[in-house]
Image (cartoon, rainbow, N blue to C red):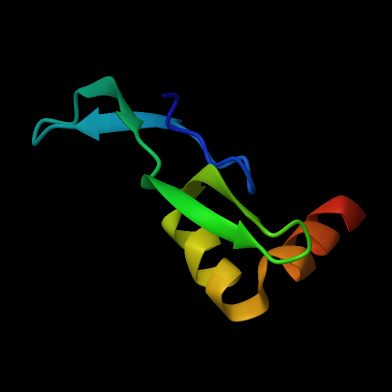
Length: 74
């Protein structure tokens, strides 16, 4: 499972570890992704999605249909 949100596309970011002496080494920032079953009332079925916690919060607030509509407009 790739650590990437299927709705927002949020994935792994890259940056630097900075030591006390300011030596910089590359590091990764992994996305906080969870597997979640979501019910689609229009199709009367569940789907399983890998969602970031930000997408989960938005999904609970707006609903799946409104969230997909906003993503298609972008």
